[in-house]
Length: 162
Image 1 (cartoon, rainbow, N blue to C red):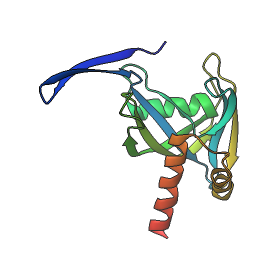
Image 2: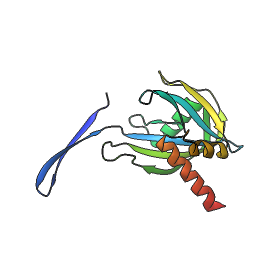
Image 3: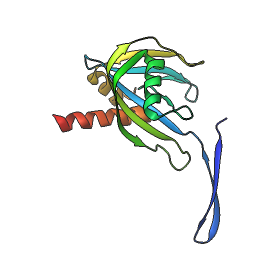
Image 4: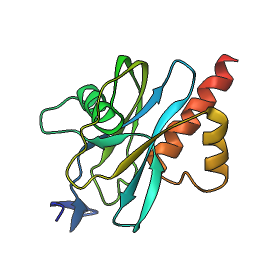
């Protein structure tokens, strides 16, 4: 079970108690190969009872910085390490019911190593072109919120520099 937080506060002099799901910091990584293809993962998500297409992502361990978590998750899930890891932005996906904060990164200078899946992970790594990712997003095959936001940020950045 996920831990639940509780906080009592006053609104116009009346006390209210609010509960939320404690998730903590999470990272998502857009890993860009030298040929421009991006690494994505397909993995089973029990809450949806299906495999999803996502950028590599995961929770920060206690005391672990977001960058260190991004590097760890990239290697664990895709079997790649990066010489460059740039923090792009952070966002709060659902502040009404969770304390989750997601840090988005872009990884470049990739070198292949080996994967190290967590117990229970069943991951397939794919390397797609930007056109393939765009087609998947348009067709409703890329539906993970953090991955979609990271992809939209990538597209906006590309347009701004073109």
